[in-house]
Length: 119
Image 1 (cartoon, rainbow, N blue to C red):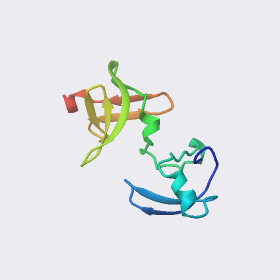
Image 2 (cartoon, rainbow, N blue to C red):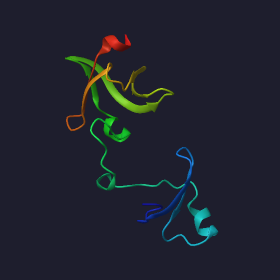
Image 3 (cartoon, one colour):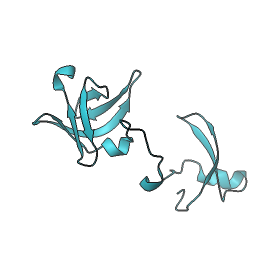
Image 4 (cartoon, rainbow, N blue to C red):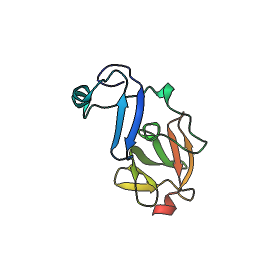
């Protein structure tokens, strides 16, 4: 969806940080300029299935983070760091690595971590 209309991405160029896309129903430069800065929306059901152990950021945001039975907080964002991605939980950044994250249960909205890994 772009600007309230269902469209198909016909071409993608640029970079991941600054993608340039051509969408259906957009003929010519003026029509493209009118859509500059608009947000592209995709239905969750249309997203490609990820391999086991990989998650979309929106699936993790809002998940309750625990260390066993001890409540740590709630994921507010997934942050990209130079070496890995991290869960932002309050003022903590919890790296998404096996030594720090024991399990992720998106359906139950729960992430179990080993707090001793990050102090």
